[in-house]
Length: 285
Image (cartoon, rainbow, N blue to C red; front, side, top):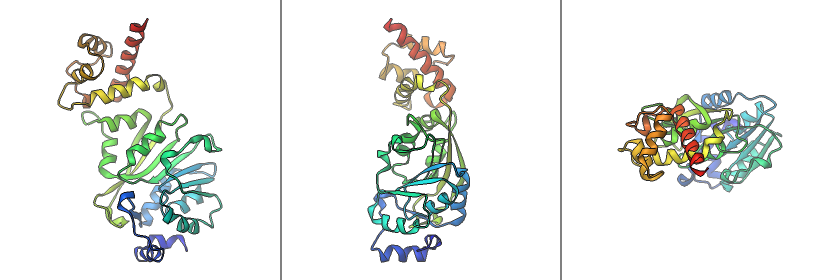
């Protein structure tokens, strides 16, 4: 079996039919069939022969083979055991590919023999945010993530004030997201019900974020708990039950007390987290 067969809908259907495989909606199986998009994914990953790539949702190997031609090693995760024989056959000429029939959500960086790595994948829509959070919150995160996800989710991840959300801020806490291109639903088989986007997230250096990470995410969860309420009201209801103290924290963080959660920038949230942490330390002493 050759890689180019995966880009032909007719040949792809025959490959799956001969293996008695029907794509599973429950696993979000929509196979990429457009060579131009494959090339854009590989280009966006910006690979060299020193790079280790963790591929999420390798499927039948449509991205695996071209990634392997550019990288030092590709560790291809595919949870569906039915696809593994085909994936292994498609990649058998690529001696730098390691196929893992495992759930990537069980990923542990310690198993790798590389200090740095990059993540690439065509992510199932239903689980994409969890996968992003898994890698971004790793103690040793990837240098970058280049992923195909639902267009609407990609737009939400890249949102800026006054349209931020828990998702956009959670991702932007760790990295800088950018939509490389939109992808028509017609470029997949079976065709999904929505369009997709190619999203690249370049992971930021820590720069002190880790020190306020716990406070930041506690604030985020409480701050977006009730969308119709002011941020300070949500924080008073779900965290510190003292509005006067929150007013002091807002003043120190140079934030208006009438602000709503979606209006704050990443810098605003980081200042708020820092001031809240500082007050917590003072109250303990």
